[in-house]
Length: 183
Image (cartoon, rainbow, N blue to C red; front, side, top):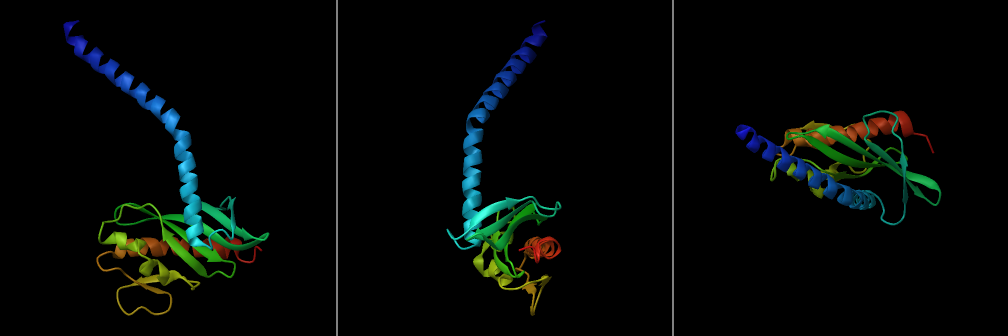
């Protein structure tokens, strides 16, 4: 019985900690959801014209698109925003791609990722994300001398560059297969 006292004490401490964490989570979870919604709305507004569109969630037809929004202005769909996640160097890279009704990329924003700071994290820079703007793709990553629809790899971050490119290409493919001519 003497040998069981530390085990029982440790069990009771772990149980109390688990209960405490569950209680804190029940209080903070609604606030976290509100903050996530605010962050999503801000990200959507960064992709498109702020305050000019209402974003309506649409159920994606397949699992290549994590979430899909139609940007509606004056009752008419003016663009779509698609959220994709592709494998980068250090994990998934979340990409929001805005595509107008003609199939051209309007804007690209990088969401959560774990790419190497100072190397792969350069995918967040506007100078990189603007490489996709105005084109209909598909895009490919090249090391040197990019041509039309070529994205020059970020030095020492080819995998990160390819992850973003794959995300944008997935959004364009989805648009062409499911949304082109839908409005």
